[in-house]
Length: 141
Image (cartoon, rainbow, N blue to C red; front, top):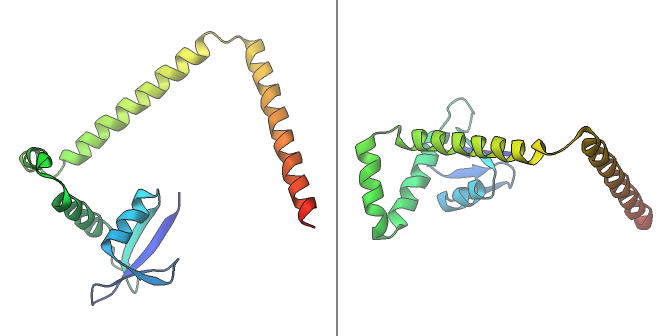
């Protein structure tokens, strides 16, 4: 996963090193939503502001939320600062369990011969992809 270095200057402007431009908090939220990880530091990279900026993004998003999220925000305050961490851990554990159970069910009925056949098909597919890529390279020449 890509990590984007963002430098935060004394004037609170943030600079995306990869894009070589200043970015807003909203743009940082979009970068994170796209799957990238950000690391926000001061210009000398000796102070890390990542957690602070991510909290700002969450706070800004909650300001833009409709009134239906107000009960949820109350619950977050009641549960304390670790509420989101605990919820995320529960979701992660649930997903890990679901993946394991799904994999176990999928593989349960397979025999050794099935794995060998599957391996052959994967190797054939990889060969076809390699041939296709080589053909693309040759066509560009």
